[in-house]
Image 1 (cartoon, one colour):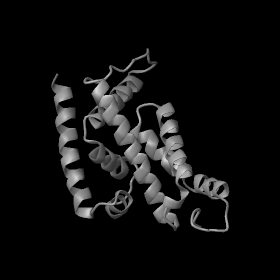
Image 2 (image 1 turned 180 degrees about the horizontal axis):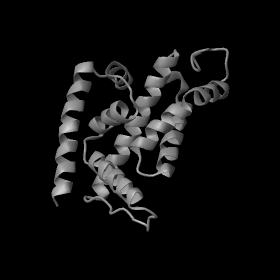
Image 3 (image 1 turned 90 degrees about the vertical axis):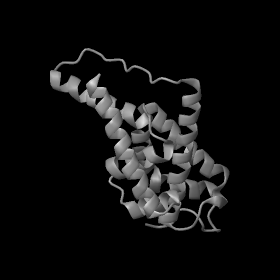
Image 4 (image 1 turned 60 degrees about the horizontal axis):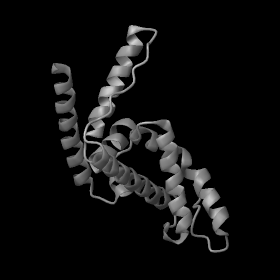
Length: 175
């Protein structure tokens, strides 16, 4: 894919528009998995592109470099939001469970809620890595490149994150 940023003859608005057209769907899918609500995912993507608009010169050249920069910004915004939320609220909110039509739908909602709750207990970077790998299907080398860390570090976070998730989910079944 062509690079959206880095052509000096383009005006910043056109470059930002191309950047948005090229990467917003991927960023929204990631944000949706990191956020609790769809509205939060939209806000995360919007804030990511606002930061890109504020400093277009800081976005590196090349499609994969642009994407990596945007993913890092998105993950950092999520981490900031998670930290802020953790300070304001020490315990997880109970989900509103509406009357569901079938027992299968209720079980699926409960499973999804348990996984989301377990993910919320992980450290921000570990949560992002687990979401990228397990839910998005992103490879270890690509995650390392996107987050600017080594592949060994990604594998370590995956291992520890899976173990922590198993502990949290196992404790939820016993209670």
